[in-house]
Amino acid sequence: MNATDRDEETNGEVEYSFGKTLRRKVYDIFELDKLTGEIIVKGMVDFEENDLYELDVEASDKGTPPLTGECRVIIKVIDVNDNPPEIQVTSLSNTVSEDSKPGTVISLLSVKDKDSGVNGKIISIIINEVPFELKPSYKENTYSIVTKGFLDREQVSHYEITIKATDCGEPPLSTFKTLNIQISDVNDNSPQFSQNSLQFYLLENNVAGASIFSVSATDKDFNDNAAISYHIVRDGNQNGIMSFLNVNSENGHITALKSFDFETLKTFQFKVVATDSGAPSLSTNVTVNVFILDQNDNAPVILYPLSSNGSAEGVEEIPRNVNAGHLVTKVRAYDADIGYNGWLLFSLQELTDHSLFALDRYTGQIRTLRSFTETDEAEHKLVILVKDNGNVSLSATATVIVKLVEPKEAFAASDVKSAAKVDEDDNVTFYLMITLGSVSVLFLISIIILIAMQCSKSTDYTSKYLQETNYDGTLCHSIQYRSGDKRYMLVGPRMSIGSTIVPGSHANTLVLPDRRRASEETD
Image (tube, rainbow, N blue to C red; front, side, top):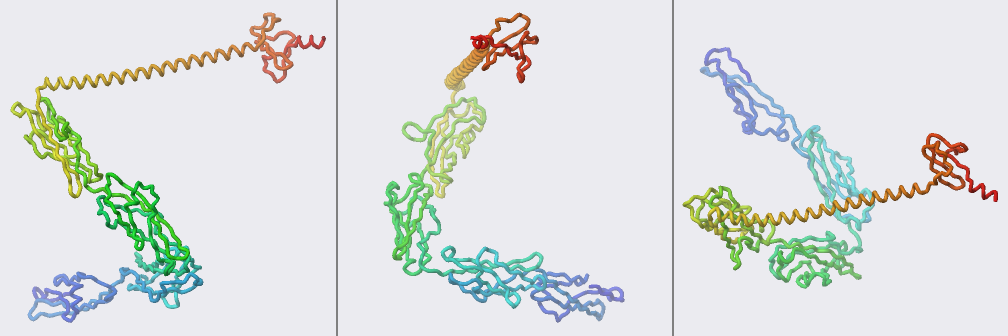
């Protein structure tokens, strides 16, 4: 707001204020700066509650007496798309007969949106694949749901029709409505489980005689034909497990007559048969897979150190001259449980000198924190606590006695270990040399056999050719051979007199007259 006053000094200083007749809610929504005249929104403005505000503003000077001027400010609220559509079902038939004809009306519904204009325009559709369709009525935003095909309860006995109503605002807002429709049928169905196989998880150490889980089957028929009883198939192939299970024939609750142990049995399966009371009765079965879940019922077991009497105690000797970070030993343990129940953590429970040793809480490795001095004791006792991470953790303790020895004694022990390691490496090298030598010999023998075979083939090939007895020495090379009724000779650059080139042959292949054949014809 901007007001002017022609007076000077305090007579011309203007202050602004709202009129006294405005509603209380106006003061909660708008604020007026008395010096600058700025009108600020300080509350929530809702178009759906009020789309127009008329504010009376007074401007007064500081003269005596003060003079005032008035102005009316009209504020129009512009609608935004902040209200999703609403779907209201006015009529619904929850059960539809299977023999209903296409076009049968099963429900009437209406939609509305509090917004105005384009923000209040609504588009409604059925978003899932069902044999129903949404038809608009003569009245705006009113629809009917009708069947668009024949129904078959043997295939689908229950439908969920999901209707989506979306306005045309920016961004668009949507509302969903789901209708449950049952399809009626005749008595021609056997009991059905929800799945072909069921999975159940059972904590070990269950209370014997208590119900551990239940199975349930449904029958699409009615009355006695839908009354189901249950029993377990006992085939005798479950290592006696079936003898410890029982099922309530009426409600399907399964009871275990023994307590199961995860470390002994982790999973088993059996079959439950559901039979209706029809005549003749119909039945179906389901495979039940039971998985035993672990509980923290096993304490950690110390593997090292472990003395002959079974107590977790060991002695480690290390030289006095080792540096900080030297690995003294590693406490090894395991837990029969799994997961967090079998995850072990190590901690020092007792220690003679806290400045000498440190324990890795995850690996159980004991290392030196500093070098030893002459004033340090020659023997140190470390008590290690090993515990799991179960809800109620279990633990075990191990004792390690660390003895400090002079370096010469440590080197002697180290030499013994090194000698054993060298012997082991020598054995490996010896066997490796034998293997490589054998492969090399086999390779050489194979090469010699191949060369011999090639030489044998060359001798056989040249032996098939006949030496020309009438060769006059004019050719540098001459080899004869026979093929059928003809005799051929391979020649070099010059040819013998009386020889004929056979058409289609190579240029250095000549045909020689067959003297033996001519003599035979003469006879």
